[in-house]
Length: 348
Ligand SMILES: [Zn+2]
Image 1 (cartoon, helix red, strand yellow):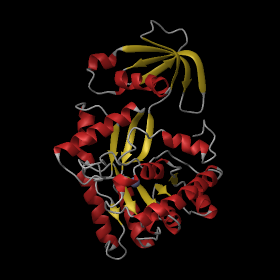
Image 2 (cartoon, rainbow, N blue to C red):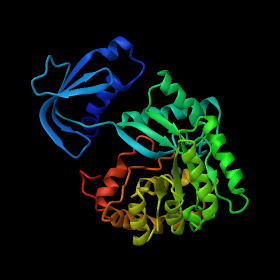
Image 3 (cartoon, rainbow, N blue to C red):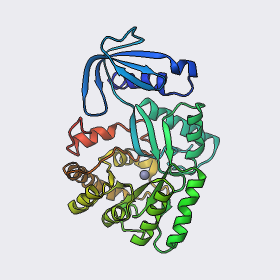
C-alpha cells in the first residue's frame, strides 16, 4: 500500500529532480500518464498526462504523447516539504540517541541514510533546524553526489539562555555569523523544552533583535516557542512559530493577523519518542519525568492543531520535527493531523 501510494512521486523525483542526471537527460521531454493527480493547489485531476521539460512541468494535457511512464492505477502528487526536521540525528553504535553530535564516518553514513529514507518517503525538500553537521550533507546533495531531499539548514541555532544569550547587538552578530557559515534559515529557541515546562528563554528585546537582523540578512526565522513565547515571536516579526503548544486562541489570532506561520506537530515527534523510549532515555535532555510529560503533552498538541485549523486566516505549514527513528516516517504526521487534529484530509 505504502509503496504504491508513494512510488509515483519517487519516480518523478528520481527522473526529474535528481541532479545526478545529466543536462541532456534533464532537457528531455517526459510524459507521465496518471489516473489521479493532486496538483498541490487543492485540485484533483483525473485521467490525464503531465508534460515535463527539464525540471519544470510545462503542461497538463490528456492528449500528450508518447507516454514515457504509464502510472495508471496510481496517484501522482507533488514532492512534499517538511518544514522542520533534524536530518543528521541518529542512533549511535550502541543503539542510543546521539542527536547530531557525532562527526564520525559512521555518523556521516547515517545522515546520508536519513536523507535517502526521507526522499524515498516522498519528501523533496526539508528544513533542517539545525546543526552544523547539516552543511556537508546539504552540499553533497546539492552537487548531485548523494540522493536526498533539498536541504535548507539553520546551521547553529540561537539558544535562548536569558541574559546570558547576550545583548541585542551580540545576538545580531550571532545571526550574521550563521549567514556567513551558509545558513538558509535561522532557528531560534525562545522557550525551554516543553518537557521542562516551556518557559520563555529570550526577552522580547532579544527576540526582536534576532528576527530583525535575520530579516536584514534576507533570512527567514523559525522560532521554537510555547505558551507566551508564541505571541512574543509574532510581535517580533519572526517568520514562523515551531510547536506552539499551549498558545491561546488570542495568540493564534495574532499570528493570523501578523501573517506569522505556525508549524504545529500533531503527533509523530512524540509518538516516535515513546516508541523509541529506551533509545532516548538517559541521553542528554531525556529523563523519565520528560517522558511522563510527553504523554500529557500529546493531547495538548492535538488540541492546538484542532484550534489552529479553525483559526481564520492562520497560515499553517507541515513540519514533523523528525529526529532519530522518524526519518522516512515523516508522512505519518499527515495521518496524525487528520485523525487527531481534525484537519480535513485535502487541507492536510
Ligand atoms: Zn526540532
